[in-house]
Length: 472
Image 1 (cartoon, rainbow, N blue to C red):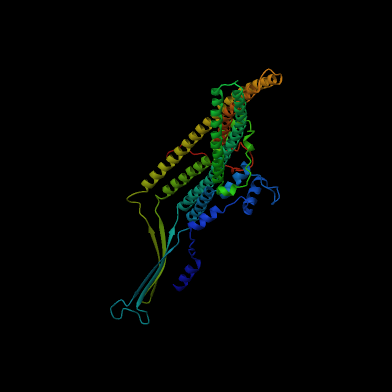
Image 2: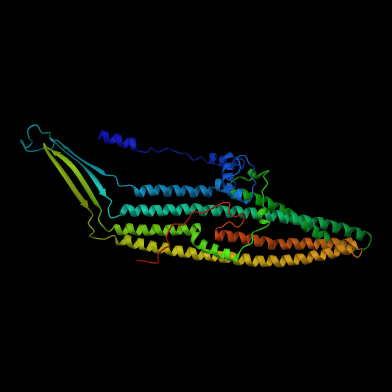
């Protein structure tokens, strides 16, 4: 017993308390920075692996996405769940430990002379119970745990795509606010010129007070719009910081490159069809659901194996008043009252539920792709119409400019035409933004980087079979 206690003491893993301090975690989150050396190594390895370690980083969509993969707590949470799934595989694959039964009876009253001469007046009966994990139960448990581990791996990839989508959306909002701000500033400059010219005309008696008042009101509206856009740009930078997983002050003095949205890639209809088919079989959530279905099949195998009795072998030895006895007990559960029908029925139902969940997810993905594709095509058509209108406005402005140069038009007319062109440009930018947002939605639906493609998030090869339609 002492030797056994020593073996157990040497093999046990001792619990180590890891305190969780809100003050320490808050301080760590607040101290995050884009200048962290380990972060820089991670970002360069993900985006420009051939670059030297001290190369400057251009904080564009790809680099910010890599920083988010490094910092964002959603990634840490998904990786923690993956670690738990890995540990579950170890647990499922373990063989059951034997149990030690020890019988010790001392000083039992007996008939005088019943104990042989020289025999100890006691009974000792140690026996070890070995549970035989037969009928493929351990293999089925392990298979289910392995499938769930694969599902957890795909969940990490899905979390990565969600992080990228949030970074892209925040950066796109910043790009839109900055572009609107620049266009509105141009309009305000022209509006100031127009008000000044009309005030001079009013002084000379060539313009009415109503015309001047109307343009002053327009200038006030544009000035207020500038304040709103400046606030939107500041909030967009905060959203970018949140999407990356750093505090707002970590972006102070950092130039964020948003030129990925200036020239979006054109889509090929044939390639889009190929991407659609791949998304329906290769998306991270599709693969995770597929792995969950495979785990349900393994659970069903385990339930079927559970209808066979568990067997326990108990070899032992007993010493009873001078007599040595060797024994081998065999224990088995008797499937008299049930043959595990309830567990088998539950496993069949859960497998059917997993299959239905997989098919429902595929239908949802089809809807997401269709909706994003239609939105992208329609927004592209609207953008083309807006571009044509802006071209007409530009030609009209050129004609007025030529007339002004020839002395056939005055400066207020020229500036008014330029103000109209600026207003048209601001209105047309809404169509531009809708097209960029639709392209981002299509990127999310396909789980394929359309902005700055081929840099991050290369998913592993799928190796799982498609779910069966069987319900037996």
